Image (cartoon, rainbow over all chains, first blue to last red; front, side, top):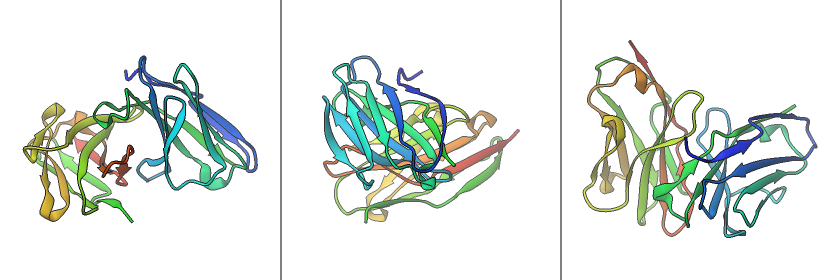
Amino acid sequence: ETGVTQSPTHLIKTRGQQVTLRCSSQSGHNTVSWYQQALGQGPQFIFQYYREEENGRGNFPPRFSGLQFPNYSSELNVNALELDDSALYLCASSLQVDLEKLFFGSGTQLSVL
Amino acid sequence: AQSVSQHNHHVILSEAASLELGCNYSYGGTVNLFWYVQYPGQHLQLLLKYFSGDPLVKGIKGFEAEFIKSKFSFNLRKPSVQWSDTAEYFCAVNMGSQGNLIFGKGTKLSVKP
């Protein structure tokens, strides 16, 4: 077990709707990163939060937004869902920005119909 | 654009066969290199990593990888695979001072008993 939990595990939405995905990081970890893994692809970096501030962003439009809370849990929000947003969304946590000790959750499978 | 290429989409081997999975990246600066494994239904797990030093790195479960800077490669090897190695393998690269990983598309390994 990684100690990183994501909810929900599966979600079905329709095009145009909004969705919120949640991530509880491993105890003591203050950095959370979100990745999108489309079918047949590797994970793609969305953004990273460090101590409640955005600390880097990948090539995703502004309708992908996030939050990190004082307890270091995190949310990923996606507005105006499109069919291509269907993917597995992964959360990863670490203490500081430490890629050597990055722990992934099992992901939320989002289907947009 | 910076990218990571994994040469094989799906590899099928019999138990005890040797494994080599290719990974190349496109970036001329300092890199940190990783191999992750994703067993069916499980989260991404770190197999091994290279930051500096000996370019031949050993990881968990008998896996090793060799960093060849001149070839921009970081190939994964295992002398003798087991049925339990059936999984998807992802090469990932951290480039420069960025705090995120760039993943390849993954290689699905199926080991026949």
